[in-house]
Image 1 (cartoon, rainbow, N blue to C red):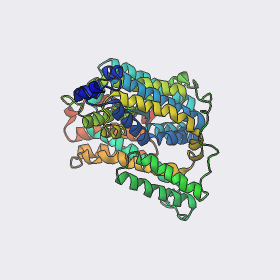
Image 2: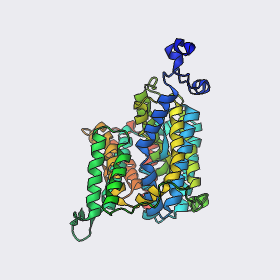
Image 3: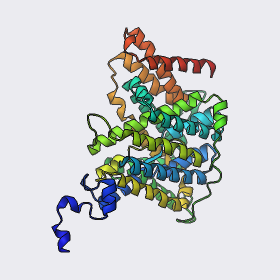
Image 4: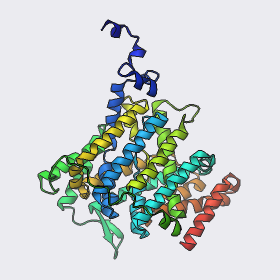
Length: 452
């Protein structure tokens, strides 16, 4: 006991386990196993809503099966997050990306009538390409070529799209083909809509009060209220063995994706994942104080984890896996190393045994819709960074984010932005400011509109 008390404070930080200390550099980062555990659990609770929302999108809407997608989501998240912790030693968690799952479901499977097996093949190919790009300098070239305004607009547009889906699924916004195309429902007294509004209010309360895991807790409280009033089906159990993953495991159709002319779909997956991941890494690393000369140390390792997780996720049966901005909650709780990610990964494995709860609420729009709306709000935060006073920046950004919800297609929004940007720059006499890659991409998207 005497020896423990006499150990210098910096060394004591890593005393919980010297092996963990050496591998994750706990003492160097002034953290401990206990702090990393609390941070890992915090991160998990903050992003646990994906275990409900992803099975709703892919399992219910895209017809892949709620149970198998739930398992695929948990397993892919656990593997991706574990790789991030072990390879890059960063406190960042990964899971199927919001926006990417919406694109997979509503744009590709439902919009383009592409079989989900083929869509999974496109996800695998995008992960493979992302992996190969990480090995070369091409990734950096693409990132540097695309202007910041378009990057910000894509994120904002996806946020608007997700929020629109939330209102639509809840029945608050409905079709009005003879009038204004869409309108506010006249049935606001419907119990499901009232529960949705309650869920939105309680989730906003948690978020404004800065409760860690506010979105997740909002869904839980909404579900409980729904059970009390008989709006939501009561779960038959709390724990169970995980459902079978057979319906989606290794069901991807890679050749089908290649044969159908996969360029547009794969590029959309690749594009959104690339900048969503980079944006998350920069944001979380900046918060943790890890940025050096505005660069991310070990960035390639982090991107390797992302690309491998995407390929693995497609094998199990889920859309593109990417880094989550909710990881910032774990950093705020003190997480500084990959051990935080390891603990978060463990939480995803434990969650596999809570499927009865997910099954009871995954198909209830009143529970999932508030989460979609709140996530949409969070994603439009980058709107303020767009240079609105410069028309040659504002026009392509505006059209990119507006066309996503209006056309119900993330790919269309991206396409419009990439075609418009070079044009307005030429009109503004700034043709030389546009990177040659942008001209190539603009031509490719013009060809997409003509032939696809």
